Image (tube, rainbow, N blue to C red):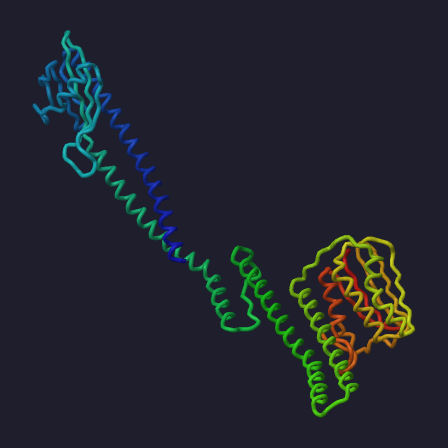
Length: 442
């Protein structure tokens, strides 16, 4: 990763430096060429005047050359340095003779060649005859300056590229150090480390710290999921052991010696009771696990009166057999809740009140400022004080024995439903008995 980043930085810097060096070279070359062209044009004009008036050819800038050709290309006058050397090809002479002004370079910048010139040829009429006047200036100083500039730019670009690559390497290492730390921590987690958290600086807010917080949140979710799985397995194994043990004992006793039909029937009834208890316990565990693991509810408008009547009605025969009253006090209003989960939650609270409480069981509901409150009370002895802090724990029971009726999941399920609705559940002792209240936004 670091190597790729450094290569990317080096490539980018190479392009930037090449562009900058090209721009500087172009600007300097343009300035030198402009000066050279100005000198050449001035010299050309002075030569043209001298040839036109038949005067002696004037000297030009230092290192300048001149040559005058006749109509047929014969050298009429020339600088001593070039003597009879022809500066133009026949094709070029023919082009100038037809009125074209010609300018071109002789020799190259790289590779280095001697006697580099820039010349300009122009047709002049002198005494009725056509003459080709050639003015030339040496490019030696200009080419030397450009070669020196190229060398300096190459050296500066190379050093800058090395420095930028080093800085990019150090920066990439420093920037990716937290990522490597996160990777190492994740590897530790994969090796079985428990309660792992990434060390994320609290005084920074950038992409890497946000990544760290996201990973910590993911680790929290994973740990919570693993903890729910452990609790589910532990609770299920613990709670299922008791009815299974009772069933095994009943069957062992029944098989120990021959039994009458009445005794076998009684044994089967006992086993059926334990099987139903297993079914109820399994369903309660699965419902509670589904609600806790997903926390997903689907709100929809529902009549509060119909919802509570549906939760209470199945318990009225039980209340009549026990000679107790079931009272529902609720306004006729529509609430936005998940009736699929809220209905069994209230039903569990009513069931607990009938089983553990006394007197009238009252279900009272109110809606104030968008919050639904459902309170289930009875007229019994209430909760033991030591039970209240753990009332909503799984399998928490007021009695010490786990062999009695009930699974101890009713209050836990009601609390999970309230939490899924972003609400709360509260258990307390009222003046006349126990009271459990669910409060949830609606």
